Length: 357
Image (spheres, one colour):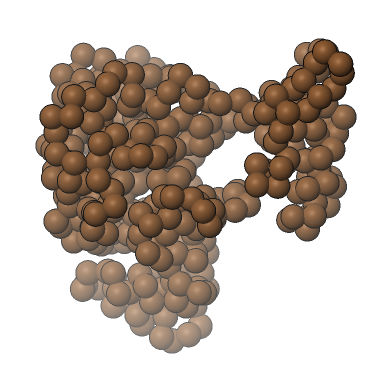
């Protein structure tokens, strides 16, 4: 929107100027042309911007509906600063990303032991309240502003940003509260930041921008990092599909939450993927009925695993550990008469308060 000069200072009278704003009709005209969508779809997108609190209506009637004749101002959700910049860094810690991640891992492993359920998928958020390791984590992440991302390896970035994503989500929830609406969840993912090195990172920019190789995310229209974004050199080339088995997805169907090392991150993620694929939560096979049931991860993010359904199944076969389940999948797949369906997802929050149990 900024590149299209849509966001600007709009003079609406001799005495009033709406700074850093856009008019509803200008947004509609632009998005219809840019994305080749209908006007009705553009109005829905405009409404979504308002409901997400990505923009603020500047008219006096107090309504929260999107209107072509109204003006809207971009709200800086991070106006109080990045979440990890409440105090100045000391500069006493390493700038090397791999070494920093190893320090981070040492802190977050005992945090996970303290706050996670036995299967490592549910989070008891109030246990962070008096947790010494979490306080040390918050202090350590202030030092992330000094990190040298430019000279890091792919493995170092993969491990660090995966660990960072999972802990950043918990940090946001601890500070801002458990989200009660889908819009609150989206705000947490899109509009609250850590400063790492020289740049700001939201949860979605870490997940879709760095870890998935700068790919369009679910319900997104564009890639996270544009052509001139200075974070582009840090993306994982082509993305790493294994991160889907390592990221806290904010719901009961999330994979186990673990800390990853810089040196062995691929092996650790691969092992976790194997464990999940060996369970009925992610993959079910019926040889008699010739059916394959997959996690919806493989549908929503199908391009991360292959060009088509066949490529996705071949990716799964390559990752699975040897055994009868893998043998059954190979048998069903190569007979070529199978059907594929997708397992239901439990979208309930996996971040809970023990008092609500």
